[in-house]
Amino acid sequence: MFRHVILWQLKDELAQEEKEKVKLGVKQGLEGLQGKIPGLLEIRVYIDGAASSNADVMLDSVFTDEDSLRNYAVHPEHVRVADSQVRPYMKTRICMDYEDS
Image (cartoon, rainbow, N blue to C red; front, side):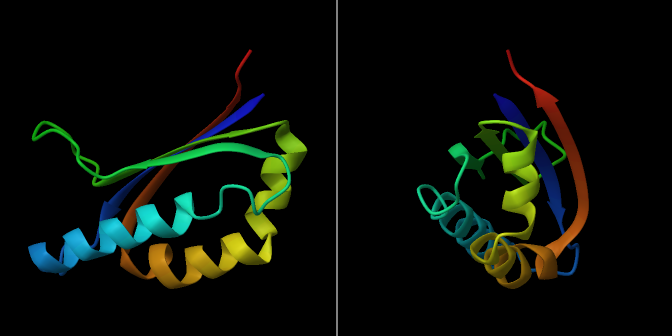
């Protein structure tokens, strides 16, 4: 299995109410990809971090292998969600991909 983990920080100029709406949209959009992309085994988005967190959103996803992750990155359903619900609102992105044995 291959794991893909991302931490995002939302743009500073977003009002708190807008941040909550964006976080929920990211969660619904990305978790809605479950069952639509070959090789995507699990996808979870966390939006309720503790006060000690310095990230706003975390994606934790599992793929059958690294090729499946590469296919996910360019899959039209993923690109649609990323372009409409994720990328426009994020200030920073930190990613770690690794083989999870």
